[in-house]
Image 1 (tube, helix red, strand yellow):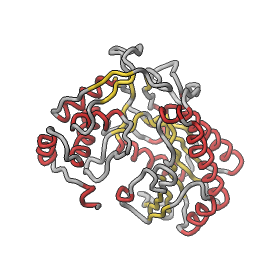
Image 2 (cartoon, rainbow, N blue to C red):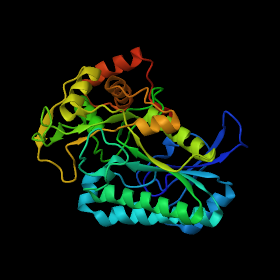
Image 3 (cartoon, rainbow, N blue to C red):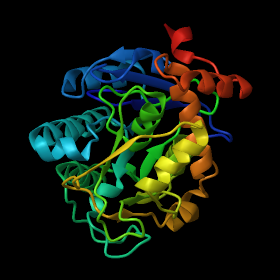
Image 4 (cartoon, rainbow, N blue to C red):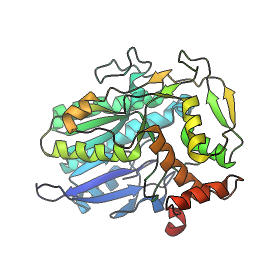
Amino acid sequence: MEWSQSIQGMFTWDPPAQPRRVAPFSGSSLNTGHRWAVQWGPFVQGDLADLNLLRDVIRAYDIQAVIHFAGHAYVGESMRDPRKYFHNNVVNSLNLLDAMVDTRVKHIIFSSTCATYGVPQEVPIPEHHSQSPVSPYGESKLFVERMLNWYAHSYGLRWMALRYFNAAGADPAGEIGEDHDPEPHLIPRAIKAALGEIPFVEIYGSDYPTPDGTAIRDYIHVTDLAEAHYLALAAILDGGESAALNLGTGKGHSVREVIAAVERASGCHVPVREAERRAGDPPCLVADGTKAKELLGWEPRHSSLEEIMETAWQWHASQSHVSSCVRAAQVNLEAHGGANPRAAAD
C-alpha cells in the first residue's frame, strides 16, 4: 500500500508452487504519491494511521504478506522536523504490525536504509556493522527494524529488512519513474538542471575526505531493487530465516561523478552550485552485498551508472517541455523507442 507517503504492497499468493504467482493490492494516501503510478491490482486510498481500515483491508482482500515501503525518506527534512518522521515512520509502522498480528498475517518485507549505519567505520559496510544513525530518518528506520525483531520473537512474524543504498534509475520500458515535488534527490535534480527546469544542481559539501571532495554513494537501480523484494518475500514464505540485508552494488560514485554521468547520458551541460555540507550526510556509504547473494541468490544486473543514467534520463526527458536541450533529448528518446507514460495515464 502507499499509505501515508510511499508505496506499500499487500499480496495474496497461490498455494505453494514454482514459480509463485502474486495477486498485488496497493493503496495510498496520495499525499505525495500518484494514482497513475499504481498500475497493477486493486487500489484503496487510506492512511497507516487508521488501524481499523488496515484490519478491514487485510480481511477484505485476504492479504497473506506485506511489503512495507510507506514512510518519509528525506534526511535533510528529518533533521528539521524529526517529529514528522517518528510519527509517520515509527508510530504508523507500529499500527501496521498490530493490524498484521490482529489478522494473523505473518510475513513482511520492510524498506529500511543504509542510513541506519550512520558514519561507517568500514567500507563496504556489512550488515553486522554497528548501527548509529546520524539523522532522525535513519533512527526511525532502525526503530522499525527493532520492532520487527521483537514482534517476530513474540508473535511469530517472519520478516526481512532490506537496507537500500541509493535507489535510482527508472523503468527501462518507460512506464514509471521518479516524480517528486519538490525533488530532493541528486540524479533527478541534475537531470532537471540539464533540461533547464531548474537553474543548477547543488553540490552539498566539497571538502569530504574523498578523492574529489564530494560525498560517495552506492547507486542501485530500481529494477534490481524490485527483484530483491520478490526474492525476499518468496524466501520467507518458503520458511526462510528473518534477516536484514544490504541492497547495493559494492561500488561507490561521488557527486561529481554522478553529475558527469548525467552530462554523458544527456549530452547537456549540468550547471552546479557548491553549498555547505548537509547535516546528517556521511562522507561515504557503500554496501557489502554478500549476504543478499547468499540468502536470496540476488545480484544487481542493471545498476551500472550508465544504465541508471540512461533510464533516468529517458524518463525525465519524456516529461519535459521547457528546455533548449529538450529537442535533443526527444531525439535521443525516439531513437530508443521512448514514450510519455504520463500522457497515456492522464
